[in-house]
Image 1: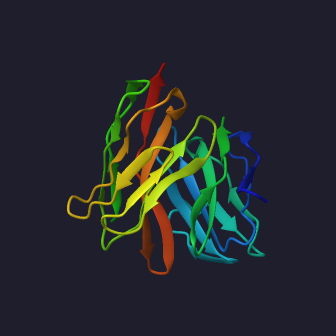
Image 2: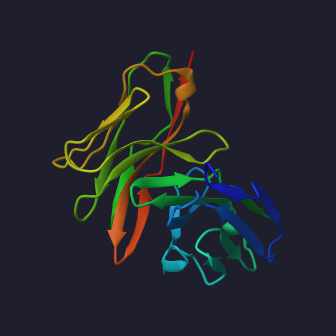
Image 3: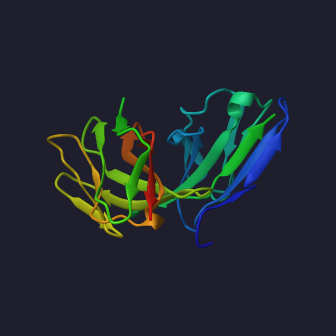
Length: 112
Length: 114
């Protein structure tokens, strides 16, 4: 597609539920990133993929967070046993060797 | 580790006023520097970038110059418009141990009144 597509745009879940957030990167982009943006803050890095390989997951806040990109294209960020502090906007970005990171519109996650 | 510090907002200006948003960084080496803009309810859009010292990035009337000596990348625009109202983020690109990522400042909210 023309841009990075994320779904759903909004997700409301009860504390303790599992959620899955999807990212469709720009076609042909090798690199894919997930960021977490708390209200009124800048995005914070979560994890980085190069094709299907997860090269860096140092930003994932706990072992409840899990990301995958099994075929080197679409990626899913999964959060298990959600907590209220997980409420944030989750941004996905993709890039190629010669182009900077392009961001999707994000998924706004609210945990009740 | 690497970090970015932006001037605190919010910033409120009248249309056609001059804009400066300060950004300084701390990094090992010489990272690429970026300004991203975020409109309400949307993701981040790349506004401009600079990849080495003394480079000037420019787009839509906005400019920023990579100053190695002062580790700064201040955003400027000579005459702002109402449509420039948004949140602006300064960022650096970090390469470390086979990974790459953007490190962002906290953002500066700009409101331009007619």
